[in-house]
Every structure is written in structure tokens, then in C-alpha cells.
Image 1 (cartoon, helix red, strand yellow):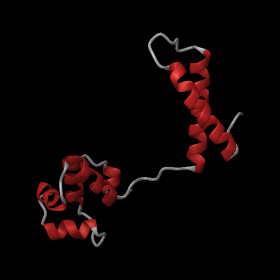
Image 2 (spheres, rainbow, N blue to C red):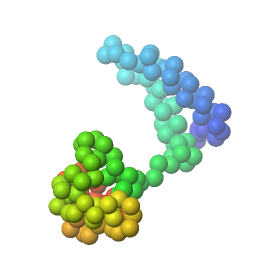
Image 3 (tube, helix red, strand yellow):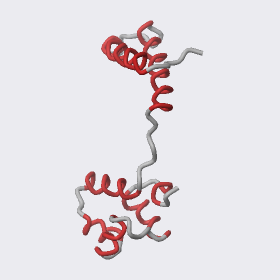
Image 4 (cartoon, rainbow, N blue to C red):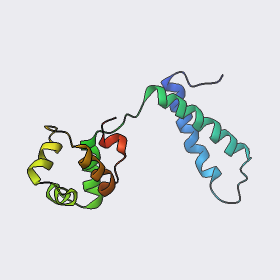
Length: 122
């Protein structure tokens, strides 16, 4: 089985992907062109290497709430009001001093579009 084994090979594969991308854009490039096939193979190899060497963990609830606050243009007080809790309770959650109840986690999922696994800390 072919795989990327070193950081140098990984960097070379990334550089080749950058070269191939402009050659594969557009509706006039057939899906089975040599460039598209090479690109598909390289991206699979790079993804496999990154899964092992650069794993992406699940974000924390606090990080996810901060992202949603940014995306929705809300401050902590407005999020507390949206969730139907007090500002001090929201502050305790954001500072990691307390965990949300199951009912609050459900509300976060619904109102802030947070995945249940993140809201429940799974």
C-alpha cells in the first residue's frame, strides 16, 4: 500500500496538489483526466497522513459557544438571554466553573446550532 511516510513527502504532496488544482478547475476538464486522477490519489494520501500526524480533536463547548457568538454577532449577555439563563450563570459556563444542565444543553443545541455531542461533552 502506498502511503506518505515522512514530512518531506507530505510537503511534496501538498506542493504537487497546489500545482494540480488550477489544471483541474472548470467544466471542460474530464473527471477521468490524468490530473484529476492524480489529484484524487494525492488528496487521499495527504488526508491519511494528516489523520495520523495532525488529528483534529472535538472542540470544547466553550470554544464552540465563542465561535457561535462571533458568527451570530452576540455578546455573552445576549447569548444568556437567548438561552433563557442569567448573565452570571452564562459567565460560570464560559469560565468552566459549571456545566450546563441537560435542559440547557438541549437549548444550546437548538438555539446556537451546536452538535449534541459537544453540548453534552461526549
